[in-house]
Image (cartoon, rainbow, N blue to C red):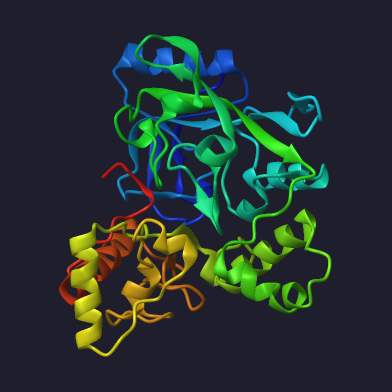
Length: 356
């Protein structure tokens, strides 16, 4: 294990803002993660796990303690668990690039994560906020999480129920925030399973094919469709594309109670506006955060100094070239205030804020 000092964190994030970590280590073995945690504890240093750096805003002052980049690799040969051999268990290291895992699963004709194609970051980051997109979320397939329990200084295996997955949340970012460092995950996928097509964007993409009742799209075709849709919205990391210098979707889709939803509908009706409705949203009275942003005076391409909104997606706040973390936070605050003024809803950010 090598501990480095004063390592800039901005180049290690997709948003590319923020200062340096006082100490930094990139770790490829479980025993090194435990040793690094003991190093921090002995010196009273706060710990922060970087992962893939894709859902992150690092403060301009950086991180005063030890930042860990978990680089544990490996995707195990899948094991089956039923008589037909359809249920397949993948064991994946926390440092594996998420989209690489999805690509391998699809190549092996295993369904369950195809709609999560193109999401940047590492496997270890996916259970923290229960990553989801296009009608799927990782909680649908996670079997267990292997992690270092910092409180008890031992490696534990947490079965799915213990993780308490909810919309964009788990124990890892709520009740037990900071307690665990995720090392490896097990995912149950279905060999030969049919792709998930319940999301509106995918239904539109395959509309003609579905209407003609031709052969349903394959997992590989759905994966490519998701990547193409994400690319069109600036949500796929493409070198040289300024709209990709972001932390992904910056705000969560609000989940409203019945009374709050009726109030929102009444406000919309008074303005002659109809609230968009999709099956994926209707189930929980979930409202499109992108719609709220765009109907509060913040259009795609909106700029506030060195920070801005992507020209392709209203939820992606971007570094326009030389932004600081304070610029991104300033734009976040302005959007939250505008949406609350217009619709009475306070948008909740998705990224993790480090060093603030």
